[in-house]
Image 1 (cartoon, rainbow over the protein chains, first blue to last red):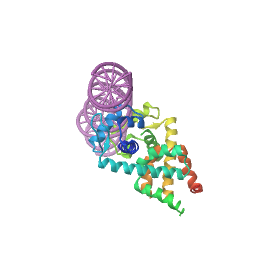
Image 2: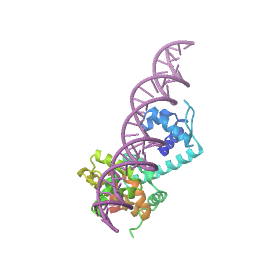
Image 3: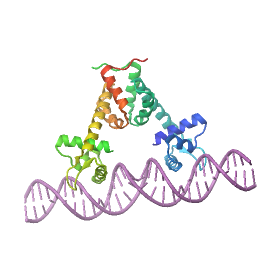
Image 4: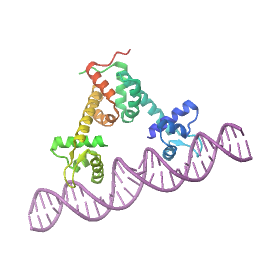
Length: 121
Length: 121
DNA sequence: GAAACAACTTAGCCCGTGCTAAGTTTCGAG
DNA sequence: CTCGAAACTTAGCACGGGCTAAGTTGTTTC
């Protein structure tokens, strides 16, 4: 969850300048209460900073995580498109897959997009 | 979890003839207590049948789920190998990825393994 | 400036998934 | 046949992540 949240927060900030809890409520389609709880946990874990009724900002650690997550997400998504998956499905699937893709697999995806599929031994 | 469990149960049965809780304890590296709880939930959900101190069997529904999961898992794993990921990583990553791969993406993977990568428009 | 509305928090609940500790059942060896 | 070890269950706890309901704060609009 943490990764998804920091990614969404970074996105909101880059789009609107700030991120409010309500942006996350809409993004994840959960209640304000849930977002409030989750943000507390993120703050406890040093990923975000916020004060009651104030916008949410990312710490350095949070920004790092967001960047990595966003990158991962994009690689997976474009890879899926590249192997012929539709826009809609690529977007959906990459959301879930990104959290389970190791660096090695990520590199393999990039390689395939650049050089095509490896020779079949 | 349900998918992982039925898959592991099916595996144990095909290897040893029966599946005992202790097999799952070893497989998932959790305690007996945890397995016991989880099995109760699976039974509640109609995926397995068991009685106290007895082996665990799959219902028709459980078998169906196990077969689908196993198939998915294998497609993802061999696909990863095919794009140049190592055995170890392919095994690890496919474990997590399989739960997030839609039918469409699965088809795309199979297609790529058969026909190579689609032309880049 | 007060009232209404939107944003947010807090309390209290539920379930899943993990644990430890303690007790029960089963089973094989002696 | 008994006893000890292995397998299993049960109770009780914790945390994550979801909810509703109710209250608080901030902002806009008249």
